[in-house]
Image (cartoon, rainbow, N blue to C red; front, side):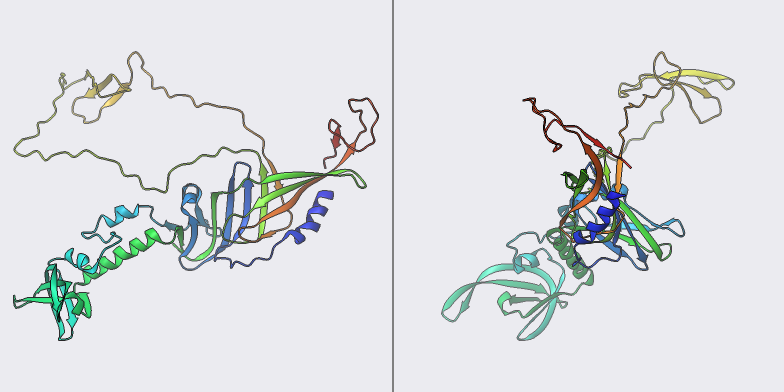
Length: 407
C-alpha cells in the first residue's frame, strides 16, 4: 500500500534522538484526539514506590482518569498524590508564624515564650525558658548601640539576661518543637519551590508488572495536505504533532483520532471545604422528643401527612405507619401523583471518529514538534474550464474535481 510505504520510509528521517532520560515508567502508547486531549499508557515494572510528575493545571484531568494495575494478576495498585491544600491553610495550623519577609531572629524567639531555649556565649552554655526579648541601648566604649536583650528563666528560678549579638548558638531543647519547625519550613519550601505535583504508585498488594493509563491535555494535532503531480497524481496528508512534556517519546506507538469526543473540566484536585453551621450546646435545657400529631392504632394502619415549608421539591409526604414497627414506607412524593418519576436524559446524534495508527514507533524529543505523514492516496485529476471558457491542462485549478482511490 502506497501510504504504508511512504510512512515507513520517512519515519526514520523524522525521528529525533532522545536526550532526556526516561523515567521508570516510560510512555509506550499515546492516542491524540482532536479535542485537545491525549490518552497515555505507561508500561514497566514496579518494586518500590514510583512517582510521576505533572503540572498543577493537569491534575484535574489526570485524577479523573488515572489508573494503575497489574496486567498479569488483574489487580489495582494503590496510588497517592501531592496535596493541593493551599499553603496558607497548612501554615495556619501552627501556633507560630514565620511568613513575614522581614522576620528577624528576636521576633522569631518572641513567638516561643515559655519554651526551653539553650544558648551559648563566651562564658559557656545556658538554658532556660524564654521570658522576654526587648530592644535596648547598649554601651560599647564611648558609643551607644541598639541591641536585643534576651531574658531566660533557669531551673533554679533565677533570671538570666544575654545580649543577642554575644550569642554564638541558639537551640530549642524540645524535640517536638524542633520537629514542628522543620515541618513548617518544609511546607514553606513546597509552596514556594517546585510547581510540579506528583502521583505515586505503590507496589501493593505486591510488586510486579504495571500499566498506568490516564488522560491529559495536549495541543491539538493539526493536518497539512500536499498534491503531488509528478508521475501518478496523489494527495498526501501530514500531521503536525507536538510533545509539550519534559519527557522524550522513545519508541512510542502513536495513534491520531479525528473527531471531537465530549470533554469537560472538573475541579477534582483542589480540596473542597464546606461551611457548616455551629450549633450551640443546650445548657440547662432538655431536648423534647418529637411526637407525631396523628393517631397510631395498635392494629391496622393509620395515615398521616407531614408538610414542611423548608422542603423545596417535596410539598407533602404521605406515609403508612404500622403499629409496633419503626420503619416508614413512603407512598407519595408529590401532590396528585402516586408514582415516582425521573427526568429522561437528553439525547443527540453521535459523531464518527477516524483513527490513524502509525505502523512504526515514534521517537520525539521533549518540547519538540514533528511533521509526520499519515495519509497518501492516488487520485485522478480531470481537466476543467475556468470562467473564461478556455480549456486548461490537467493541472488542477481552484474549482476542479478530484476523485480519490481508497484502499
